[in-house]
Every structure is written in structure tokens, then in C-alpha cells.
Length: 324
Image (cartoon, rainbow, N blue to C red):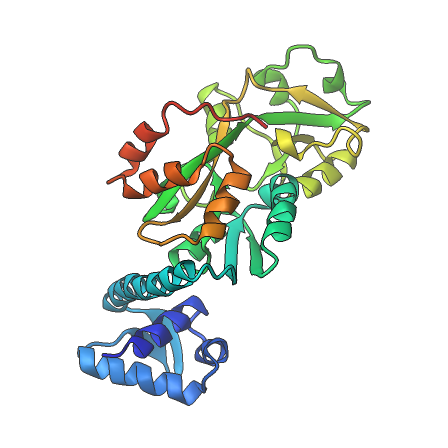
């Protein structure tokens, strides 16, 4: 078994089982990748993939276990390279971040601008998507950092560090009946169609569950992953918008009325995470601190050494998170 074979295996899985695409990313030939996969399967004595002719259709259960272990092996190999670069104080490198549209549009621009000024030799890649899409990127080790909101159950194997808290806001055009409401209730909100963020595909979304617990039905007109899209349809009169507080701009959204809903919806925590066992580069520590100043290098290193998420939570218990 060779490290190259494991690298080819992971690359194929990371590229949706497309050997040709994986070969291109690896700067090698498609027949060469196929040959090494066959040799690896022959050595292991079981198939890594199910096939339909020459096409790979899915990873076998045993193959998935090999992929998971290969990811850890390749991670350690990469950690050795990172140690070498840090020892030489080489600031070249890459930083790949998977996050939601709201974080990318409203939270990250300032931090990224400062980061680019400080680390011009670091290639920065931003991948936007839903929580499920970001979880897939993390599972396949396609990103260095993940920034999202909500339960971390979908992100096993990551160190999750809280960045800040935020609330939902209800938005309506200025001539909407709710614009005159002084103390909005769930029952009042339930009378109107709602335009809000795409619900989670795994588990129950907190928003529908909240209405159901009050004996009410959430009338959903449209869901979208982008707050700007939600605001567009609110302006068209499609429904009442529910968006993150940081997605509102006082000047650009002056035609909309933002209604405080802290008494209706609990606060959310946005966190940033990375694969447990990963050796972070110096510039990655700096990026974390730009996003959340309380995430100092010492704090992050202590979190990495913590044995589990409970210990991480205890470590960060004394920190008061900023609110956006």
C-alpha cells in the first residue's frame, strides 16, 4: 500500500467518484488513477467501490472505512509539511473556508480584506452553501475551516469554537400591516405567508417546530439560502421576511421595516471549526482571531488539546460572545 494510492482514493471520493476529474486535480492520467485503485483493491481483498461498467456508482461500506482512515493518514502527512513551512516561517499557503451565504456576504468581508492585506501570498478560497453542503465539504476534507450556525451534530470530528451570537429580525415593506405592530406575537405572524431561510434537510428546523409547539402552522411562501434573495421577494409582496440581524443594512434596506423579534426567537450562535488533529498554520490562527478576537492562539490551542466537546465548552464558558 502506497501513500499515493490513498491520495488517489480520497481524490476520487472528493470529486464525486469522477476519476477523470480527480486525475485532472492530481495532474496525472485517468488510466493511472484507475490502475492504482485496482491495485489497492487487490491488495486489500475487497472492493472500494460499486461499479456500473466502468463508472463508479458509490463507495462500499468497507471502502468508506478505508477512506476515513486514509483521510487521517493524509492529514498527518500534511501536518508534517505544515510544520516544515512554519519552521521556515514561510507565509505561502492556502486557506479554504466553507460557510453560508449570510456569513460570506455580511460578516466576512471586513476580516477577509484585512487578512488579504496581511497575507498577500496566501490563496484564499471561499465556498458558500447550505449547512448540509458545508457539512459534506467538511466530511470530505475539502475545506480548512467551516463557519456556520446551529447544532454541530452534522460536523463530527471538528473542533467547534463560538464566534458570536445573533437574532432573527422580521422584515416587511413600510406599507405592510405588521409595520405598525408594537409587540408582535407568533399568532399574529402565523396569519401571513413567510419568506425565510431554507430549512435543514436533516432533522427538524427550529422555526417550524416553534410554531407547532404553540399550536400554530407556519405558512411558508418561499425559502432561500441567501438573505438578499429573501429581501427581494419581501419587496415584491410575496410574504413577511425572517432574516438574520446582520443581514440588514440601514441605508440599503431603508424601504423595509425591521421588527425586533428577540421575544419570539432565541439567539443563535455562529461558530467556526476545523478538523480535530489538524495542525493550523500561523496565518490560520490569525484568521480565526480576525473573525472572533476572543479566539486567541492560546485559546484555540487549548481547545485543540481538549479531549471532547464538553471540555471545549467548559474552556470557553467564561467568554462573553459579541452580538451582531
